[in-house]
Image 1 (cartoon, rainbow, N blue to C red):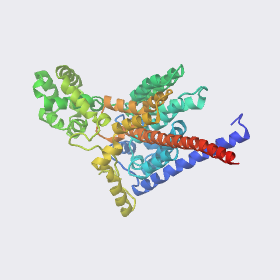
Image 2: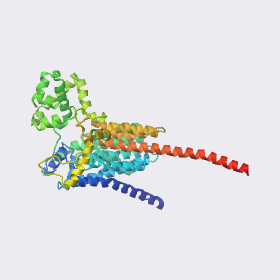
Image 3: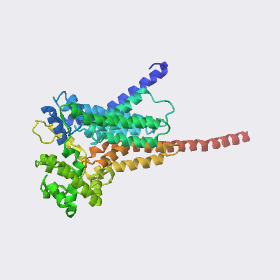
Image 4: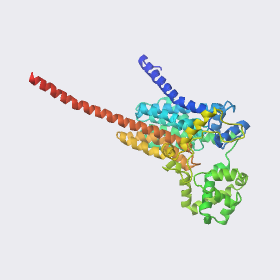
Length: 487
């Protein structure tokens, strides 16, 4: 505040109070969802983290930083309800900040604020925020990162120190909260190098990528300095295992004797073929076959042979390899649901467990909330509101309407840097057809689409009013001249 005049200081505080008020408005419907689904949605991933916290034996299956976040916000494993409560606050603050930046940089005003509140009220962002997934704080970090990058567009003044700290913190959080977070920040940096101009593009890009890679490096370092089990082959090799299941299903004739023996030493070949029945997820082979059927130790003992078989089959059947990867990554690029399976959008319940966890909200309220949340499982709702590819194209189309001259194409590219990076990192290592993996891209592009389209409509309205005034002025002058002539 030093150096600001009294009027400027009052304006500064007024804008901050307004931002906090708008964040609170976004938060309120999320609190309603939180109460209705108390203690929040918990899938098998959530329960795995909770069992780690309760037992004290932590692993790297999920990023340790996120398990620490759950431990901290649950008050040391006391209740998951405080974790989901904290997530609603984090997501509401991130969305409020992003919309504040978008409306100031792009436009859209009230329409964008109404849209973000609707996303919180309807079974989209609100239900997502109360599910205890690592993807929720990561999505908040990516949304904040996107807003910070927008502030770097076409700025003649040097960026302040607080902005640099916030940028590094958002990128670091991204690297800490997902195993592919470091790759995401590197891809963001590549797009930033194209979108920004001057020396600033290098400093912004390097800061973003370096902070994200530091976060990833910390994840790799933790098992060496703390009593945390390192990531196991069933996780680190998940993509290769899923590829081999597809090879076994679709091209069994391509296996050599050694290839087949490598697989058989882990699990019967027919089970590998069974795991390839659906190409959209790694889960059939990593969970149902390797973990649930007790083949994890065999995999650990035959890791090198499995990797050799995978490399041989990729060279021999590159088309099948590309088909398997493209199918598994279809959430990132497809405009329709993957074959034979809908995407997982929200999780408004607690999966069956032996930890004593269950939803505690009043049954009528809980049943009503679940019924509303299940709207997101409808096919047309998934394709319209959860598919990132649709909203990326809509953002580009609305930006084209608003105009891309004067370097505003760079602004659009900067806006898309986080969505494109999130989709790219997912496509490089697709786990399953869960909308949570790409939801930051969907959210950012939804709000950007409304901002661009609303600014285009507003500009058209201003142009019509100006033309109307210009037409009325000559008519008024002509009328005055006629009156003078009669006098």
